[in-house]
Length: 106
Length: 106
DNA sequence: TGATATACTTCGCATTATGATGTATACCAT
DNA sequence: ATGGTATACATCATAATGCGAAGTATATCA
Image 1 (cartoon, each protein chain N blue to C red):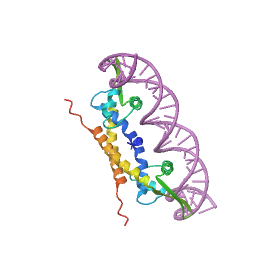
Image 2: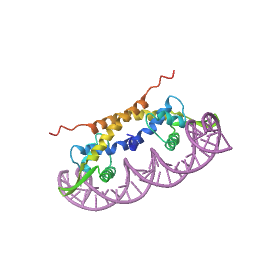
Image 3: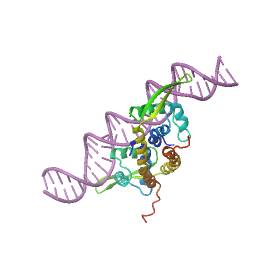
Image 4: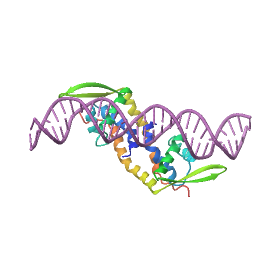
């Protein structure tokens, strides 16, 4: 998939991967894999950004000797998903424009 | 609309605005306005980029004392649109993931 | 004379995805 | 014991890109 296209989906995908159940980095990558691939450096950057934007809160836990940082979605994080759903209407309109077959100028 | 989301659509929108009929910068901005807003600095940057990538060819013309640069889409430009249509399938799958209502873990 | 529309250009800044690299533990096969 | 793989997170440098700001220039109309 085109990188630029991915950009607009990444943040919302990560939020969506967390919205139903708190999750942590490594698991998010695996959960998203069937839909879109993202590297660890990309994800951890996104998690930091979303946390700084108050869309996620973090809680560090120890699990079998290893650190796990569980992320929880906030109201603002949920709003971000809702905003995307609003944007989706515009995207559909743009998609129709891109795929239209122009025959009306004859 | 979210800027990052826009990024993935801009190039293809510009190509789509040209595909049926050669066009020039100022007109492209107006034609795209109902679907998505883009500034002049953004568009001219895109046109340069698409030209460098051999997706467009240019022909300068004079029209009522002013310069106009008409852009024509190439085969590679058309292919870029086709690639987007392929990506669209993935986008739909991602959209479904984002908007899914999880009730299966009960 | 000045505002508005047309038309293209260049510069600098901020945002962001990603590869490379690093740290650390657990588990399993050789 | 040694090495490979999975788990888990962090940081840095780089490249791509949208866009505001500012500039150049002509045509039209009040």
